[in-house]
Length: 360
Image (cartoon, rainbow, N blue to C red):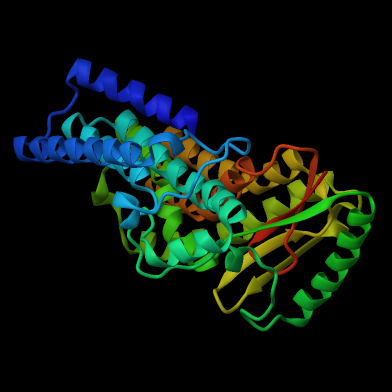
């Protein structure tokens, strides 16, 4: 998160110095108003926290839970202020680099709140924080409040498990028992598949925008060549690539697993129409994350490079879709970055979209 904040700050200063924006005057004025509003909100948030203000999470400093003033309205006004400042600056001095870094910074702030700060506050203040959470609004003013504990639980009452999933669950419980006997502690990290689909566009937008910019810069867009053949070929190509996406997961994890491809399983969660590949054998963190990222790197990044070099519009659309479809995998990678960095092994969750961390 610190890297994101520093990069977007530097990009903002350079954009202001070079006066890169060529937007309409009305848009630039709107950006100025939003930036000033964000700055005011941030100052009020820091002033309200006073001695309890900390940059990030400190497990050693003892502070009180602040629920008055602006924190009576929103739980994360400081982050909201940052977001408004960045968005306002982008509207005033728009360029694609600043756009990429703004989306990246806003996404990282959101993940910091969801995956680090709320867990810390819940562990530190317990029921006091839960009561405050129900009365206040989060950063993005959602009306429906839901505890992170519900999303991270392994309870199977959300949906009826298939026979295949029940078998994986039973096998996983044996593995979990063995790992705990070796001194490992288990931590579940799962994402809601419905929410992940909406967040995927936000998370992957910078990469899709970069691909669009590169293709347009090198080749331009000639839409006159699009025919009914494209309309038939593109869905078929994407369907094939979705299958290949899961195969790449399995191949990469299978290379590292002790039992190789016997540790890999494929299937579909029909309730959400979500295909999956799972490795039910614990792997090193870098091995698991490489297998998670590989389909998007190969089909998204590789496909985008091929489209730019060959000037194939069909490949461009397919690559953009594969970048977007990697949003869920990328969210898992970001979640793993925010987890504890102690010695750990990663294992796919037996029946949810996510993974289990065994850490010492």
